[in-house]
Length: 587
Image (cartoon, rainbow, N blue to C red; front, side):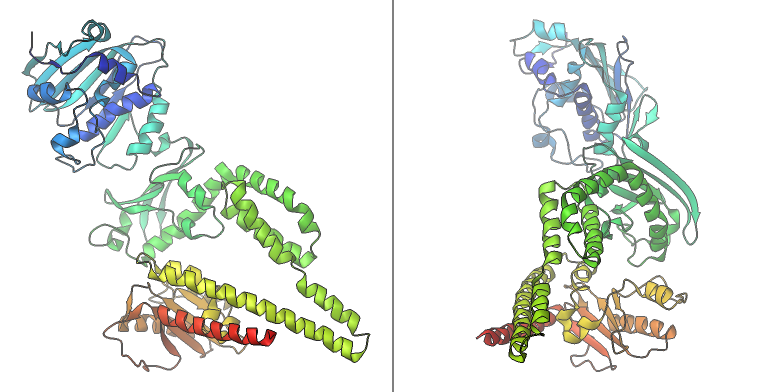
C-alpha cells in the first residue's frame, strides 16, 4: 500500500464537487487545470446521454511526478499560486486554478475517477470512488494505491477518466461544453480543444455562422469566419481577429463598425470571428502588435468586410431593432403628428438614429434622450413671437416696433443660453485633450460639428467625411495618387465665399513636427489637382510644437498651426466676453 493519500478529510472532496451549477462548468475546471499545466492540446470525450460510457479528458501538459501527486495534487485546497506563482513556467500563462479544489469537479458527474499522469515518460496512476471516500470520511488521510512505471505512450500529460456517471444528473452536453469553452479559450492560439473529435471553433458559438473565402484586390486570398450570436451572454474579447502567417495581430477589429454613428455599439459584443489575410504581411508593425496606421490593404478589407458584417447583424438582430423602434415610435406618435411637416421629417430621422445607436439599452436610458430631442424640436418661442409680430404689423408703428424689440430680447436670451452651453462644451473638450489615451479620431469626433470654437468665420463651413469622398462625390472625379488611400482627418466644404477648409488632427499628446506640416499641405495639393479652386486654408492642430517646427511659422500662406490648449483658451475668452456683453444688454 502506498504512503500517498489525501491530506484532508476526504469528505471535503465530495462536498467540493457539488459546488457547481452544471456538469459542464464542473468539467471546465479540469480544462483549466490543463491550461495551468501548459498543455497545448486537450481532447474531451463525452458519452451519449444515459449511456455507460466514460468521460475522458486527455491533455499534453507537463504532467506530474509521483512526488508532485502526493505533495501537491492530493493536498486538498493547497494554494497553487503560493507554491508556483501567478504564471505558468513554459508559456507564462495567467494561472486559472487558485484554490486547489477544481481537481475533484468531475465527481459531480461520476462515482469513479481514474487519473493517469506522465512526466518524462514515467506514468503514475491511481483511482478511487465515492464509496471509498465515504468509508474514510472523518479520517485525516485516505491511502491510495499509486502505480508508477515507465510508459512511452506519452512523454508528458494527464488523462482523467470519469466512470459510473450519475444517472440522476443531467449528462454534460457537448454543445453546452463548446459554448462554455469558446468563451474562455476561443482567442487562444496555443491551446487547441477537441470535443468528440471536432476541434473547438468559431462555428461553435450559438448564432449565425458565416465563412467567406475570397481573393481581394490588393490583399490577396482571405478567409473570413465569424459568428453573430443571438445568445444573451456577452462574448469575451468580441470582434474579428486578424491573422497573418499564423500569428494573431493586435486586438480584434470591427472593421469600422465601432466608429459608425448608425450602428448600435452594444451589438458589437455579439460578433466573434477570425480573418486570415497573409497578404497584409507588409502592413504589420515590427513587433506584430498592430496593422500599420493608414494601411491601404486594411482599408480595402474594411470596405469589403463591413457590408458583410452589417448584413449578418441585420439578419440576426434586425427584427429586434425594428420592434424596439416600433415601440418607441408608438409612444411619440402624437408628438410627431403635432409638428409641422418639415420638423416631423427631421424628428423622425433623428429618432431612428437614436434608436439604432442605443439598441439594447434600457428604456429608462433611451426615453430621456428621445424626449430631450423632441423638446428641442418642438420649442415654439420663435413661432409665438413671430405670430405676435405678424399681428402687430397691422397696429400702430410703435406697437409694431415694440414687437420687433421682443424678438431681439428672445435672440439675446437664446445667445446667452448657447454661450453658456458652449463654455460647458469647452470644459469637456479640455478634459478630453488632457486624457493621455485620447486619439485623433476622438478629438475629430468631438470637434467636427463644433467649428465655432475656431472662430465665427469657421461656422460657415459644412462638414464632410474624407478627401477621397469629397472629390469623388462632389466633383465626380476619381481620386488617384500616392495618397489615394489616405485622407486628412477632416475636410470641410466651401463656405459662402467659395473657400475650402482642410483640418489635420493629431493626438493631443502629439508634438507637431515639420513632417506633419508636409503631410497636411500634401493633402491640400492633392485636392487642388482635382479642382480649380485655389482658396484652401489648412489647419494643423496638435498638443504642442515640436523642435523642428519654427516658433513663428510663416512657411506658407493660408496654413495655420494650432494647439488644442490655445484654441480652447481663445474660444473661452471670446465666449466670456460675449456673455458679459449680453448681460449688459439685459440691464
